[in-house]
Image (tube, rainbow, N blue to C red; front, side, top):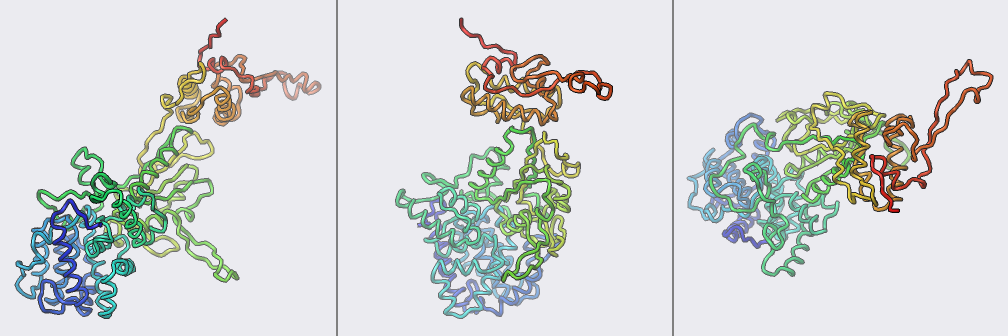
Length: 613
């Protein structure tokens, strides 16, 4: 069962308190800390929705100071309701130590105390408040949004009949489907925390969508449908648990061996430790009230804009794919696009498009969201999930036109807190045609590739360059495997060709090592030279085969790789030499690759194969 918790010895006390809370507050609408009083009813929720949800405090004050101000017009019973809401929001997590949780509940209570704070309540003991697992740094960073979700959800529940509430609270899947239906719950971790604390035999002790996704992908059950249905993923994870418990009857925990899917990698320093999202180890030492830290949210997650650049065949797309697989396994979300000369702003961000009507008899113009806007919206909905946009061949399009005003928004210092409202933090713009403000959240990374040898495109302008980190992918002959074909030394061959190209052109027009990886026989090497290397050199030298010959062979003399003949104007233009001149010209063509020998190829880098007599 997923209630198995080897990390926190007081789990049973937490589950028992949650069960009593369900019956006492959610079903019968009585107070948890305010005995014999109707607290969890619609009339009290209406005030909290009005004072907290609909009137967010945009000041620079800390969370609790803002909350006191928002509660200033609330009755003592409504203040008690907020204190009890805070209790259930913090009950499942270990982010705050029990004494600190208790002090924060008392702080809220005292905003307009309905009675003396009940310090002796069985619901305020250290055991009950000790929690079940970490919500990660994001849980308290976005605490104001988790509380807003709790208010909206429980207000909806309070407005239902007693029988409806009983039905919802009696079954875990019914509860999950109901909670998933609350609009403000998109991306909220409280969904995972409440499902587990109320129904620990059905829902995992994992309070992060990205970590659940990581488990689903690691155990081969993930499907795209899970993106739109958290209960569907939870059902899949329950099936995985049943299978694992059959295999490991002593207990299954994803943070411990023998399963260990979520065991974090070794931490090298303190900064790496604080970046871990779902560390299940018990909290020790002084607790930090992250929710009370004003103004520094954007710096908590440093966004990354990076361009992998280099000549063709240097592993740029390979590295892109490696990163995509890595983000997939980590439970993140990604999109992949390829830029091309006709790619436009409307394709990338979104724009007005003619769309056929449902009956097929006409056309309407609608705003169609592009991949960047789609991923931005997902990142705002899931603040603790990493999102990455992969762009192949970024400089094949007019980058400045494609990005438009995004050139400002993607800058790390202009990013916004995921899920925040316009003008709370960072920079926001109104997207043409959409009419809604857009801010790029700091949990969205951009990773792109750029082929520096493509002569048909312009380089990125300085403004775009400033907003990306540049990582060069250079040809690396040492990566070539196997290293020899017969007596031909492939790394040496590549290095020699690149030295010539750098001398004749520049370092951006070298040849990547990928072209020579996996060559096992002479026919394969001949094919690579004739069908990939020489055509690439022709592209570099604008089909000037004389210079191609110089770059390939290092010589202007005769070569086994090329055939040449003279074009004589006296023969070709017997009666018109005055018009064309008398200077003879050479014409070149690639020779028959079938005639190339091992000795010929070794001679390209100055070696000669010694043949035994």
